[in-house]
Amino acid sequence: MEEKSANLEFAPNHLHFEINKQTLLHGKHLLSEKPLTLSSEEAKELYELSQEKGLRPCHSCIIV
Image 1 (cartoon, rainbow, N blue to C red):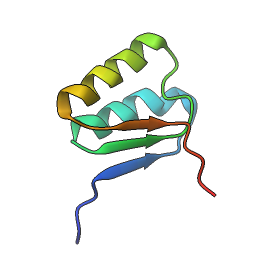
Image 2 (tube, one colour):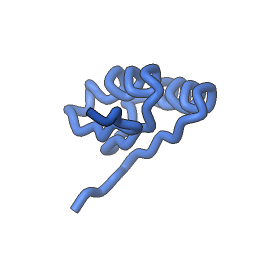
Image 3 (cartoon, rainbow, N blue to C red):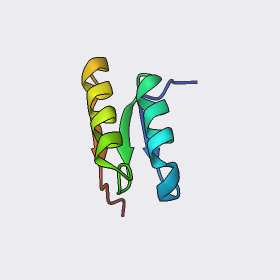
Image 4 (cartoon, rainbow, N blue to C red):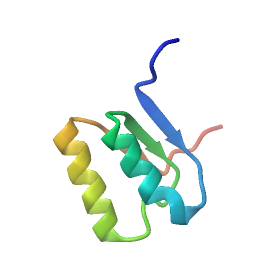
């Protein structure tokens, strides 16, 4: 089976940070519905993690 390079996250808002963080820690690009996190501190942590790993986080994705 082909390994995935990104994770598309649709979950209740209070779960976004942990799911998104685990996605980045596993080396996957992130496509997250909004809000990316519930706080600016969490968003900064995810941004810094994505930069450290050379990944691209994306939030507010609209899938039609």
